[in-house]
Structure formats: C-alpha cells, structure tokens
Length: 135
Image (tube, rainbow, N blue to C red):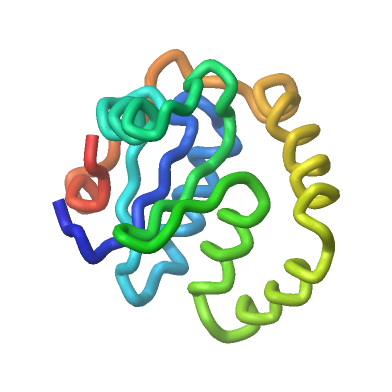
C-alpha cells in the first residue's frame, strides 16, 4: 500500500459513489488517490482503531496519512480542490459553515439509493485501475 497516497473510502454499492470515484480517477492527474470501499477491510480497520460506529457512517471519507481525515462535504471539497485549475475555486464553498454543507450532503446521502440506485456487489475495477484500489 502506498503510504504517501491519500485514501478515499466510499460506498462500494452506491451508483452515485461509484460514478464519483470514476470522475475522481479521471481528474486525478497527479495520481494522489487510492480507493477502498466502506464495506472492506481497510475501512473496518480505520473505523475500529478510531472507535467510529460503522453503522452510523454513510459518508465519503478522505484520509491524508499521518495528517488528518475528512468526512462528508469537507472530504468532497478537498478532493475536488486537488484537481487544480478551475477546481481550485472550490475553496469558496468552504466559507459556508460545515454544518450547513453537511446538512445538504446528508440529505443526498440518505436518498442516494432511491435517486441513483444501488448495486448488489461492490464495483470491480478494470485491470488497468486495479492498482488504485486497496481492497
């Protein structure tokens, strides 16, 4: 596992989440990210070492090894800003209080299966992308 890479934990059965991961891979020109599902061993270890209840977590999580981790809208904004260019302007949205951003994020997260659908299994990466996925 690349310890210098940022790790994104995501819902592997959510169509919206899987599409977001495909978008991130496409825009990750600096190869900063690796991916793992919330349903996998890496997420399980992450939650257990921090005493986080996995049943209450339905958010994207960005882990910056040896620095910090971010959830919900803060994670999404940090990921987007990493793409550079016009995406750097996402910092403006960080001026909105996190509680309000996360409220909107939570509404989308609670309805994501109804609005975007759900897979029976976690996404299986293509052979070309397999190295980007940790579990």
